[in-house]
Length: 246
Image 1 (tube, rainbow, N blue to C red):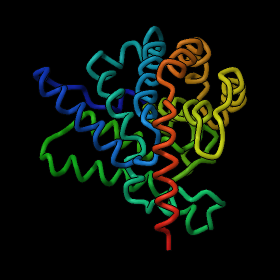
Image 2 (image 1 turned 180 degrees about the vertical axis):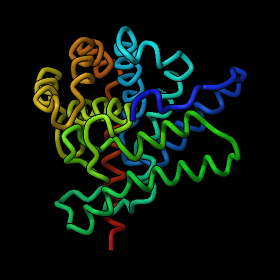
Image 3 (image 1 turned 120 degrees about the vertical axis):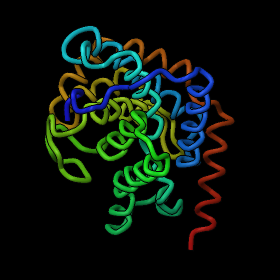
């Protein structure tokens, strides 16, 4: 799906309404990912904004992504894993290898997230560009450019552009962030891993844009790194989820 398939941002809304929507989006995102350390969602939004700014300097993005649409995409990126709210913590946070049926359930967070956001939009009773973008991202951010992703095995430009963009941001954050069972890798190593998947997992133009702003990514990762307190909170949450597992 190209940027042209995305509806226009519509009329301006009062600043206080923008702030309320932003606060609600962040609250929903954090509810869906209670086991994540605090900086994850904020870093994703910073990475998306940085990549999008570079993509909009030239090419089709420059003419097809006005400021309001870009702002909506940054907001929508926070909801990429909203479908995790429908996955039991005992499976989502399982430290060992997942059973085939557990893996299938975890992968369903893509379509579950899309459905949650679609229901939100229906309940609102009016169109929402942010929710439409969020649906595309939730469903498509684990698709691969080469067609070997999920949930539908889409390939190339059949994948929504917002999902292709968020996929790169999410992968960089996953590689460079400390997790309970492993430390994050250095920026240069993460870039090497991502570049090797140019045209494989990731869209070539997204990786090319990443290369041009990689120092900005490294700075975001450094400035918004999770604190020891946040990491300990994740460890405690994980321990509780394991203890409550049947």
